[in-house]
Image 1 (tube, rainbow, N blue to C red):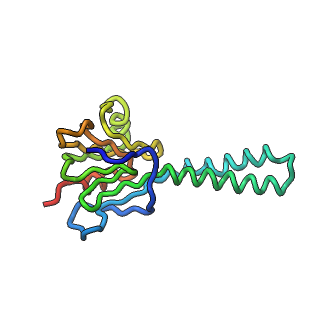
Image 2 (cartoon, rainbow, N blue to C red):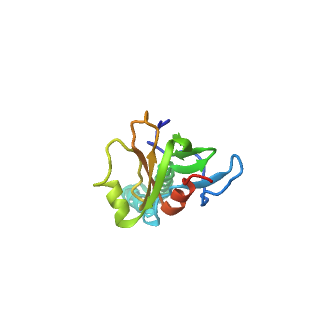
Image 3 (tube, helix red, strand yellow):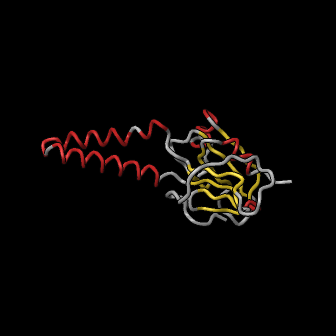
Length: 171
């Protein structure tokens, strides 16, 4: 059953790719902070420059402060909106939501046009979704718990094949 909320990011950084093989207790089979693409980071200096232009009549010192503050705020917001996706300790964690791996079935990674289809026309309104527009890939993982109202989870990722592999049952 879905636990928590995935409306905003969680703490933690970095990413590791796993293949779903045996991992030590507590070790992550997969961990990724779904960071914005390089193009998204252009927003920080662009907005800072626009704010600096608006503050121009107030003097060079004010412009410098406005540029630094606006760039910092935009960067902080982008980081805050970057959720961590992790497979560890018998759970899939996507943002603040978590579900036991025992309640999950098949996992499939999609990118390109296939990912667009999963995010759009093929999306079931009942699905649990953690989506970030800056991540092209998604993983769809079926939920096998009959009491869970979500038929599957759809999770944004930069590495759909690695995440899908980490979600495969261990033998």
